[in-house]
Image (cartoon, rainbow over all chains, first blue to last red; front, side, top):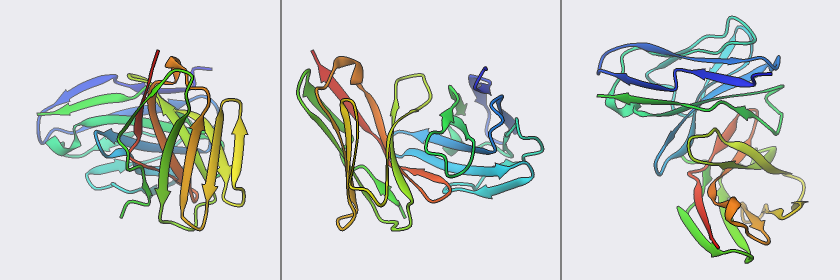
Length: 113
Length: 109
């Protein structure tokens, strides 16, 4: 099992550009989520999904789009990047929303100039 | 509105002593609480959890205490080891997992 994989590991964008952060898991987990980590702010939930075709907003969803067409993949789209979106992004998954242990990917470090 | 708060950004303890990390919450609907540990350049990993109906859970050197009336939980690490140096995130779950700001623990040899 590869677990939770995220690509790319690093990315630099210019303001206004769009991009997609990829997240995939091979554990047949129904629940997937995206977090961003910022100094002094901790881990903040962006969007989450309880299964294919179902997504919902977290604490800081503005500026981000998600879809869940398959169980394995949960991409995060930045529609028009802003410097405030400079952060480290983590994807996580678990069997269900109520599962205590979520498995996190290694993260994507994004810089928006 | 921050539902989970960790008010101490950092903590430094001597190897062998006790580390106590604190967490406060505002949402009474959390089903359970968790602690995650994060090393630099890695994703967070699950450490220990406690149900909202319990007041203590122990796993080896790690014990989590829950005080529902005060909406406060704490993680005790005894004895602390240099390998415990990491960022610790407290979280609560209501069907989605909400974390606090994190506390950086440094254990000095």
